[in-house]
Image 1 (cartoon, helix red, strand yellow):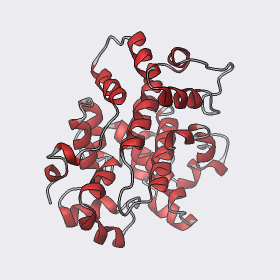
Image 2: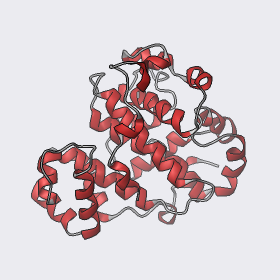
Image 3: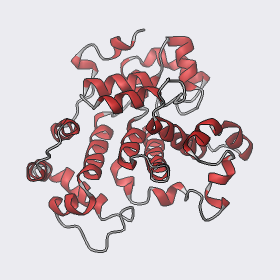
Length: 282
């Protein structure tokens, strides 16, 4: 199997909502027409209702109710609104994927996004970029299972798609890994090069000559999400901690120092970090 065989025909690609496509195109534009974006989102009553539900969630802790899409853009900022709409579009684009527990997958992805954003904001890295990368970093798994379910079955029996060793297993058996597929999907959808390259290197962010700090912070965020998703024991949590990546970013060398019960400066529980954003996954 080759990566290109997973995306070489339009019929193999998920259908992305038009408004999501338009917002992806805005990555390349320095002059965003907010009025036009407001109109495009407002024209979809289901999407606009979900956006307002998210905007008024506990995650954003707004002091007043956000009643319109225009208010959401003003209060949350264009980039975060784009993140919410693009994320919602991706969740809707992948349905009934053979061999995958989609509820677990998207919960893990949302946890990765929010953990990565929290880490990024403390490491002088763009938090909105980290959120986008965290949410989308494993979509290659969805594409691989959607197009080549039979080929994925033996791998799934060996190792969970969420396991930290999954990328290496895929390289050994297929010659490529899910993050490379994620990057190729992002290229087809015309995401910016910075995001594409970061996606490609998330499983091994220190490997490139020029390290992407965004990829590194999502690698660490994915570890945090994986601890909960796979219900790691304390021993497994410590053994799997990417200390080299954490130290490169200026975070503690010991896993326990980063967890919620380790002190005032540790990461909050994932339930707290993601509170209110669960609606994105519906």
